[in-house]
Image 1 (cartoon, rainbow, N blue to C red):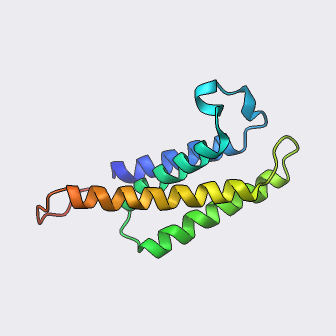
Image 2 (cartoon, rainbow, N blue to C red):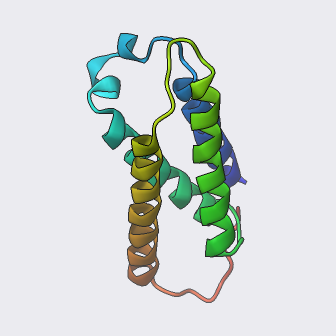
Length: 118
């Protein structure tokens, strides 16, 4: 249950940040690199998604890629934001990095034979 709450909380937070009218008004720790923020956000999202749900990797990647497209489409219609293919590329890189981290974590975690409770 906590993993699902974490995933949806991150999804809401990322959505709020994506649609803020003045992204540059955020503290420098948040707004120092837009592309790194995209990659980091989508790495975290895919990790949280993998821990929260048992969906296939393909379904997760497609879902989060469509979410990235949705963000850019909405930003195209916001007067103070703009859509960017580079943002979608950064999101995609984040998805790949998140999957690599997930696979690494899965190998490091000892098998207990028990289902984890979500």
